[in-house]
Length: 173
Image 1 (cartoon, rainbow, N blue to C red):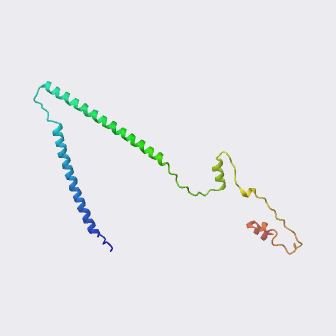
Image 2 (image 1 turned 90 degrees about the vertical axis):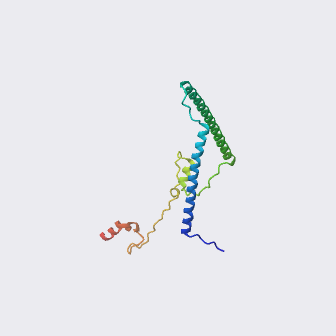
């Protein structure tokens, strides 16, 4: 049996319901975060007692400076640990790449002329040319003259009459 497709209006309605639920969850999460933060501050940061004199305030400031130093050391240690693990992860990735080896890309068929192939093989230092037509021998045709000059051989003077110059000579002469 084929499944029935969902209509666009039903899909839109379900999407809006999901968005409303997600919005409520995000708002609840933000409220929980605020209450959690307030509880942490109340637990770890007691309210300062300002009723004492100057020596008591100085003692409190010394304690605050010591706790700040301790927190900074912990933060530095955590950062160093994270950097060390990141470096180990990168080293392991490099080892994996070395073990797998580099994948060779698929070669493509390239159309090149003979001159381009020679230049690619020999480099730019050598100026070799593969002009095959220049190496061919020239074959000259001999024109045999028969005694038909009176009537005129139409094959003779074809080169002279070729092009506009030959036609002009025909009409001028």
